[in-house]
Length: 179
Image (cartoon, rainbow, N blue to C red; front, side, top):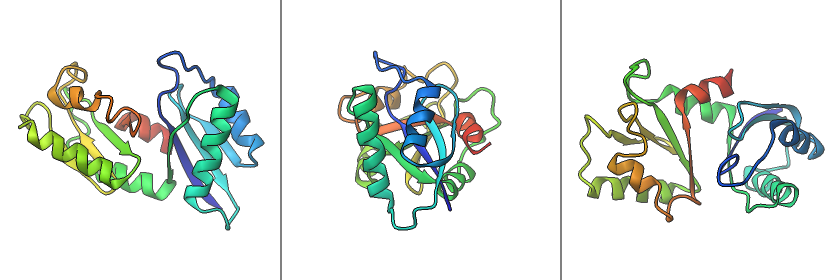
């Protein structure tokens, strides 16, 4: 049995409302086990014993069902529990620094994440205010608390080019997901 985590992009913002109970019910209807939602920001933990299902097929199946049920163009990041544990453990900044907001950014592909980091590099970011580091399958970002919409990297991340291909989670949320 493989434990998976689905991170939904763009739910409960911008008019797309997906209630946790309805989200969990949908995953159960898909025949997935041990379904648990975490917070109201589109985090679903579940298990699948279907050894024949590969991640891309499972991802497509979930996205299609989300789109049909909730009426939006669904996009998710699908990772195994082990992959998420590795990403969280590798956070390169001081996760206990209360003056910072520790973020992990997930993308639709390595190419998107590489492009995002390259674009960030072109901005000449001040690493003491807006540090960005590429990780294995993610980008880590650790801005000063209260600046997460104002820094150059925040503005880059909010561009139309990246909105449909990235989703981010606070490190504290990811700890809850791994619970």
